[in-house]
Amino acid sequence: MTRTRIPLLWLALLLSGLAQPVAADNLRQPVRAVVGAPYIDLHTGPGRGYPIFHVFQRGDEVEIVSRRTQWLRLRNDSGIEGWTPIEDLGPLADTEGRPLTVRRIERTDYRSRRFEFGIVAGVLDNDGAAGVRLTYHLTALFAGELGYTHVPGTFSSTRVYNLNLVVSPFSHLNFEPVLTVGAGYFENVPRPTLVDGEPMDDSSANFGVGIRNYFSDNFLLRADIRHHIVFVDDDNEGFTEATVGFAAFF
Amino acid sequence: MKRWLVFLILLAFGSIAAAQIPEPRERQAQAIEPRLERPDIVIPRIDDENFEFNLFVGVLSIENFGSDFVYGLRGALHVNESIFFEASFGLSEVSDRSFRRLGIPLFGSQREDVEYYNLSIAYNAFPGEVFRGDGRVYSSTLFLVAGAGNIRIASEDYFTYNIGLGFRILPNEWLSLRLDVRNHIFDNDLLGESKTTHNPEVTFGLGVYF
Image (cartoon, rainbow over all chains, first blue to last red; front, side, top):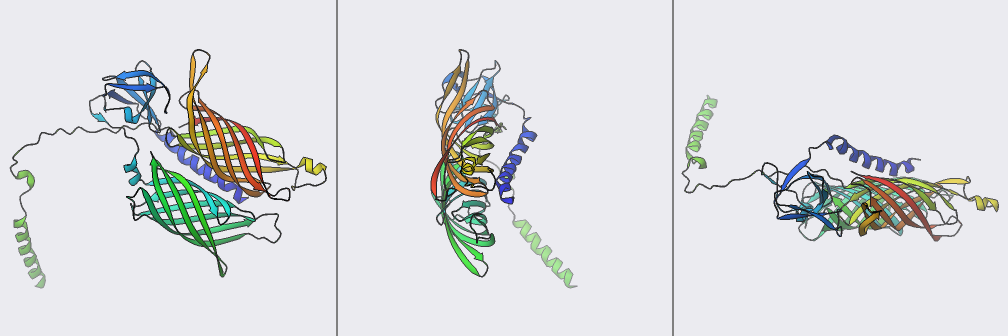
């Protein structure tokens, strides 16, 4: 029963977190800007391939309605509305002539990232595993990571919860190697069809290595190998987990 | 007595130290007055719309156990114009009625719950536009999706891959209509022998961007 609640809980948590800023912050003043580039192309949609249907000229006053990934929705006073990628925006000023800056998210932001939300898939010993990782970077060197992995195996269903320390001594490299060490617990429920299985719930420790690579925008790739030691009564059991995944950072 | 002595010594050192502090820079004569105007840079607070929340209904077919109504929800994070992450959660049912007729019931009861979740990554492979009549144009995209997760059938968990494709139409800037076709692939031993099964799902979804 409690097991079925966990995905729901995750979703509820995710949604409650997302819902709040919308309620509190959605009543923002529209941002007005004056075009400084000779012209700005307006596309019909926020992505590559959408055709250009209109052009705003230097000196036009426009409203920045919203942003979707690296695209802005612009509208002028006659109600013409379209999308422009941030890199094509050129200089903008506010209505009092002060420069407005709207930036793309790029590699420098990766270096100074704080929060990271990742999803991973891989294997734990020979069983498939899927999980989520929430990372908070304290400094360039240290980060804390919360991990949840689900391993619906052949003989039992295992859930692994971890709190890890992630050390990144070479954070300036493109392929950034990391060391992880942490603790957590394994929750193991045998398949109901197996007769002699009984649920286990044991604490564990883990250590491992991994690699992070900045991909684009606020997006990174990650790969990890971790060895878990599960303290089963007076005996230790070892499991090796290998995962690949991707993460968004904020 | 001693305290007085310490005080005097400190006072003496203090006045020497104070005498050695150079004059502040502002008071020194400046050879050239730089005429720099530093305009205030304004960083506007723009409303981000990178999250998409979606409710879906459809049909999920479980190999050997027929097809049934499925419903659920998805949350997506749009990373850039091409890629988004998505978490899905779905509920359905299976029935072993045809096995019961043969006198070999497989489940505790004839109808059992199915629930699944998956974490996926999707790629907007073919962005485009659709036309409705002469006057209406909606932006759209055909995306490919792949991921991993779990499916639980009659209280047993099975590790599940999913692959599929979806079509999304944006009737306006905050609404999305979706048609998703997924194949949930997992190994199961429900019929006594472990085998890989393919379980297609077709869903229609209604979502909002925020």
